[in-house]
Length: 321
Image (cartoon, rainbow, N blue to C red; front, side, top):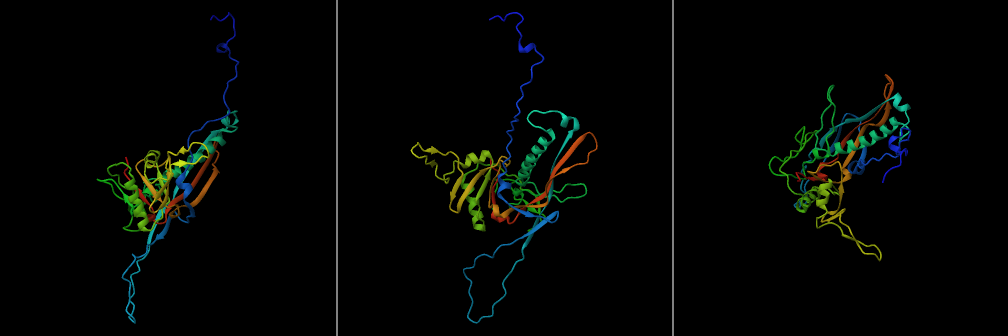
């Protein structure tokens, strides 16, 4: 249909106001299941240390003759382990002009970006503390690094064939993790592998309640036969089929399958939250940096480390495909 001559159309007008929503849509997730589940503590030095110990094996032949002189028994020393603190930070610099400009969706661009950086720092912490990265001692020119959870696990591990190897400590049985686990041949995640490590953890004395997984491996875990009841009662309505496995009922107690967006596809991390904690040396804080020109600069930082109270209370099924 023809348009009459001299009809005013929006395409030729220059005075139309823009239609920009005052809502900013951000899809990036900020959930941190591991960091949120573990304990909190205090560090008082850059190298934070603690001790671990175990009981002697149960002896079903423990006996003595009446009146005998009792011998001293072996009393092995504790093991002394530690982790280095790591400074993690975010900085925002915003020009004075930008702060004076009227923005859509936020009243102050600088404040908005600082809020974003706080959430990003939270994600960084989760990813680092779940990593296979070893600890690195700080020097005058090298940043200190905290070993992630996967770099601690040496007792209850299931690794792929070939080069798959456990992490190492700076000493034979003491010190800090100085090398992460070595990747082996990848294999499918199976219930047999999961139950094997779960049994090992329980036998070692642990009482794990969480199995942390990537989205990919969480889908696999939902097919395990040990998952909890798959139907949910909904009154007089038709029952709902629950397709995801949240609780695994094992021979050694219930274990929650938890998906973590920042965790490796290669691993299934089985742990007891009571045996992990974050030791903070310098608490998270926001500080205004020196003004050197026509801009404002603010930083958020924290210095802390991951404390593995006893790695035998956890386990890992590694090298998953």
